[in-house]
Amino acid sequence: MAAITLRELTKVYPNGVRALDALDLEIADGEFFALLGPSGCGKTTLLRTIAGLELSSGGSVRIGDRDVTSLPPGQRDVAMVFQDYALFPHMTVRDNIAYPLRIKKVGKADRQDKAARTADELGLSALLDRRPGQLSGGQQQRVALARAMACHPQVFLLDEPLSNLDARLRLEARTFLKRLQRELGVTTVFVTHDQAEALALADRIAVMEGGRIRQVGTPTEVFRRPANTFVAGFIGSTPMNLVPARVRGDELAVAAVRLPVPEDVRGELTDGEQVVYGVRPEYLDYSPEPASGALTGQVVVVENLGSFSLVSLDVPAEEPDAGATTSVQVVVPEGREPEPGDTGWVTPRPGRSLIYRDGELIGSTAEAAVPAPRTGVGADA
Image (cartoon, rainbow, N blue to C red; front, side, top):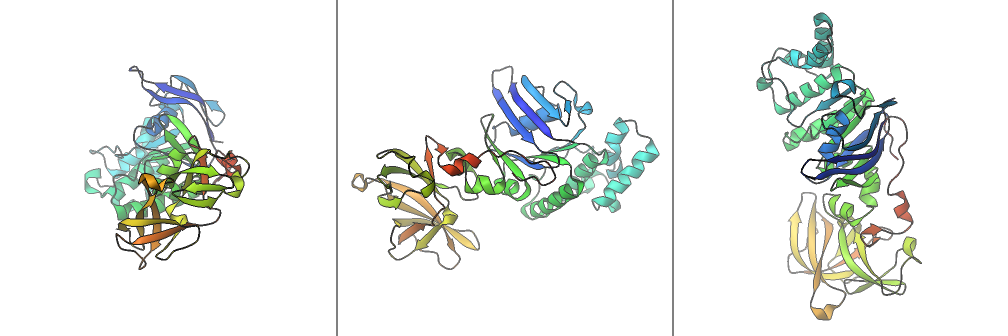
């Protein structure tokens, strides 16, 4: 078993910066787990602490049934792929792949044979005698993965391994990486700031901010039910609309329009209470004609994103007499884009809106914000 268990894990640097703040996390055996967050949130520090490259200031790290908190990296049975691949430029592909086995004092014939077999699995057989400088970015990435695979670790740790690739290679590498992890069934922790990568690759995601984990869940859960406004604004190629609203009996006053209170929060709101109304641009419908229960506003920006456009409208705030407006974004299919200056009506789809109080999701859906892991490859809850 190679589950990873973190308890009260803390990292404080000598200058007082708290990079990890008493984290508790469980990663199931065989799971593809993503650490996602903006730059400086602590995700790479967390990965390096699991690897043993950073010593924790408190708490514990368990891999399988072993407490590895005080063990050096070489005794943790993990393999790490770095952002820059960290290949030895003077070594051939064969020697780069075989290097971890050389450190473990495996005989030359055995490690050369193992390197050749691993290279064949990753389509590198024709490149074994080349040096890294003679390889493309995608080929270097596969060599780094082959080197990690060669010693059959219990855990793979991947530190933004796709960030140096161009857009096309990144898509190809993403597919390759997910298939490889499924075939190997090795517990994998993947650090990225790219939410599209995390959503596409991971069984579960931990969204981090300021050294803390703000939500853990499947890609579907963190996309559809962000646990707080930070996750709501961070996850998704188009951030969630977060609009100030006020409770008015059984309705919400949202941008000068009255909308019904979502069923899952009825009875939990107080008349007159200030909340935040959240709905993704993908879950709004745009119309150039007046529509019942729609937010009305003026189109200010239209961004062509290929098969769809992202339309931004300025809609009146709850108190329109004040002249204040708030921005609302909606996804519009190709060929139906309005022009800047047009008046548009935006209608939320039933069951797709969320309510936040003091930055936290409320309602029955909030209970599923941090699900427990299931054991087994591809655990998703």
